[in-house]
Length: 303
Image (tube, rainbow, N blue to C red):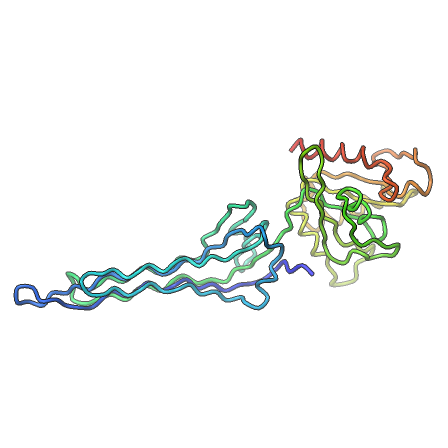
């Protein structure tokens, strides 16, 4: 099961205190304590070897090191190193109100979450040394959104996973019963020397009971193209429009994404079956898949 939502508490390092020491100079005691070192920052960075947030299940509090205290002979304390926290590509970082403060959508993306405290001054040219300042602390939400180019949606048992297998060349679990796909899964489709990531979502329930949600739809956040699959030859248009309405209701901004409507399992009726507004396919037999690939490539290349 993908862990895609977690809260973490961060505390940056405290600044090192200033040194308090004296040296005799011309028969006088003169302060010569050095300044402290800066407290450690906490920085999020992308790790391409991570695919969800499961590493945070058992550790949700992160504390950076404090800066070193200054010492005699004006020696400055060492700055504390930053604490880097690895997250998967596609992670949104939000405040506790749910507002996005960072979107780590590229492999080189980083986010400075909390700053280390400023160091204290030593007692050089002053009567006393200063203590370092406390580092920032805050609670943040990590919200992982699977980075994909294409998403496959539909009601139960319409052949979504068979379509993913047909496009990616993989063998994900397929069955002639509803809810074979219980979690999001993805595969890579290679076409004309390019690679595209395809996300297969759990099936949408035809009727939602009170309090039930479909939070996996949040993973459509990054997709460019949504494929809605049906095997309903009589009321296919009504069915795909119901799916699209569900998607847009979940997130109104999804309305601006590209949608393709696919009529699957035409091997059960007629290979030459056509219906306006749909791409007829048989994921099981491979019928119409070459044409679909070309249409997908054209749509994705236009972005």
